[in-house]
Structures are given as C-alpha cells and as structure tokens.
Length: 214
Image 1 (spheres, one colour):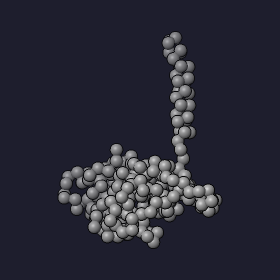
Image 2: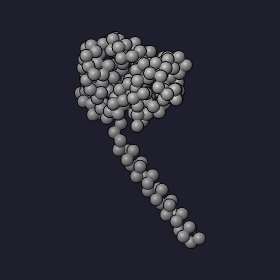
Image 3: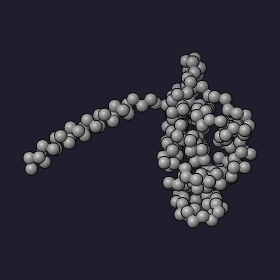
Image 4: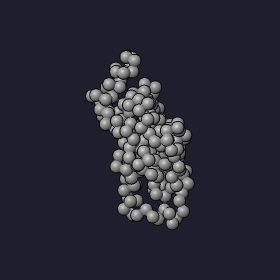
C-alpha cells in the first residue's frame, strides 16, 4: 500500500517531465518556409528525366494525374487491380476512396497506382516536365504549385508512384535556397495565408504517403 501511494507522485512527475521533453523537441522543429520564400529549381523540359512532373508547363495537372485523382474504388482502381496478372493478393487489397491503403508503396501497390494513372506510357506521354531528383521535384512543386486548389491531391497521387518523393518532401523544402528579401516580399499577406493552409495540407498528404510505405 505504501509503495503504491509513493509511486503515484513519482509517475506524475515522470509524466510531466516526458511531456515537457517532447514539447521542447517539437518546438525545435523548423517550420516549412512559405512557397514564395524559396527559389524554384528549373525542371527538365520534356519527359527525359527520371521523375515525371504532375503539372505541365501550362500550370495545370497532367492528364495522368487527373486520371489518378478521379479513379474510384468501384471502377478505375478495380479494373487496374484485375489487370495485374490475376494474382490472389490483388483481390485482398483494401480500396478506400480510390486510394490503396496499407499496400501503397509495396510493389503491388505501386503497380496499381501506375495502372490507375493510365500506365507508364500514359504517364510519360502526357508529361512535358520532369526531374532527375525527388528533392528537386519536391522544391519545384512546392514553390510553383502549392497554391493550386488540387495540390495536395496531385502530390499524394505522385507520391503513390514515387515513394521517395514523400520521404524527402519536407526536408528538401526546409533546406531549399531562400530568395532575397526584396523578392520574397512580393508575396502578399493574403497569398501567404492561403499558401500556409495549402502547404499544411500538402505536407500532410506527403507524410501520409510516406507512412503508407513503411
């Protein structure tokens, strides 16, 4: 009884200490800069790079991204699963909202995501910008397209195909070169607020894609 009573305040003290320690770690996490504060790298014109851009030179989502975003559990994704060699595992994949749950990032999950986007030939033929590095693509997409209404969805679709993009997304943006002050100030307060909301959603999408691949 005495031991039990003595352990309670100790537990309270330990819990408070751990909470403060975690709070301190969280406060040291470097926040993402605004899209207008970083320098956007130049993409490769055309589809000769290793990573296809989800946005075209006109600033709209590529056709393959549009296909992936509109894929549904009933038809598009289901057809893609059925097209993968008739493997038994494909019949057991949980399909939620047109997206693959825990299998995203595995060989089968990536293959289904590619099928939902129309296949590699479709992805490449409808892309007019590309990159040789996932870090370069992450910085470019964030700097140029974070304000796009469908950015988080487009990013998630892209991470389903290129899992390495999700893994380096936040770190690449945090380490991206900054614009000089005069250039960064061109972003208005309204744009900054909108970008913060969209950037937060996009980071969540990229993190979700990364967690699904573990």
